[in-house]
Image (cartoon, rainbow, N blue to C red):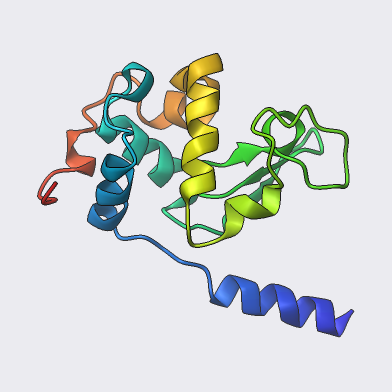
Length: 142
């Protein structure tokens, strides 16, 4: 048990926290600005609200599901954690959403946006919808 706790601590200690402009640059390069009709500021606001730009963010929900990664992607619908049955709409392991390379997170977010839209994310609705999200990319050299 102590070994498992140590491993979890080491994993958290090595989490990548993107700076705001660094993440904006990565998302823009991946074609997220305007993807599914959603501007870059909205994607940035979502990532800020969901994970504070932390690649290893994990949140456990009251329904027993878990959200993973920079966009907080739910295991029961979009990825497999090998513990619970999952629709696995993105056809990936949830662990792929917890690494510093966020290409799997971006690819899965695109799948979700195509099928559900940005409204799928409660964090976007609560923190970004009908708000000026331009500040999330302001001052970034994009």
